[in-house]
Image (tube, rainbow, N blue to C red):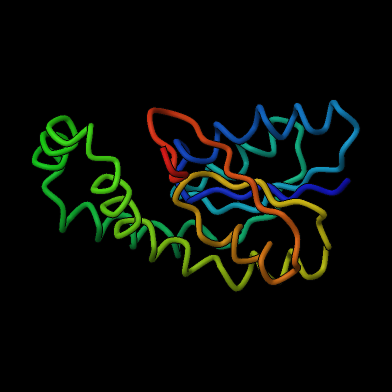
Length: 156
């Protein structure tokens, strides 16, 4: 089986996907990571894991969006709200989606093109990544969220 693995740009979203990708590969599946990093070293770090990686956007396209988002966001206020609203999963998911939607948007066309060419049987994506599920829907293949951390976008 061919498995395309996608994640939102950012090393904290990308690195947790490496272990599931290796588990799939060890089980005999063909795996391809399609990701964009926020810094020049992010995608090469993934490639250093020994997995095949296709860069979906250069970091120069991602970094300004991340920086603009951080400039608009009072991170201390966000952290306080997250702690206070940790029981409010819907609010957290909505806030995360608002923050990461532009990042999914800039890689979506390339992820879909990679999927069209490579023809995976399954797409595994990180939480908040919209490009992977979009590619899966276009191809008519299953998309599976690899949840990590404290939250999942799936119904609780």
